[in-house]
Image (cartoon, rainbow, N blue to C red; front, side):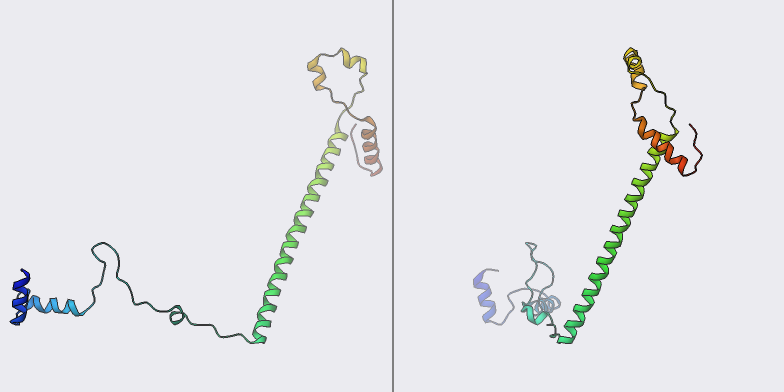
Length: 159
């Protein structure tokens, strides 16, 4: 409708929209009530803004007794945590120590169970490269001490 016709219709008391009565009521309701949803561009409607303090409740101040009680509980929790950490560390230390002892014992047992043959250095020089790879150089004194220790303990050993 052109602007002149709209102005003329308003002055005469007519509605500028030429709609049937059933739709006029719906149009009037839409004008009164705010629209829900999104704009055509996709942006939502702005809400009524409120201050942060009105939307969030403030906490009441703690008394000295409550503060001290909370601190004691926190200290207890921290001490328990330290204690658990220390227990785990001590368990790891003990496990590591057992593993080292078992490794030493295993090496000693392997050394005791070996059959040893003394070969002169002249014989070693005459050996081929492949034969020299199979030969293991070893301290005989340490082996004899290990065997002597096992005899003192009263264990049966095979030599």
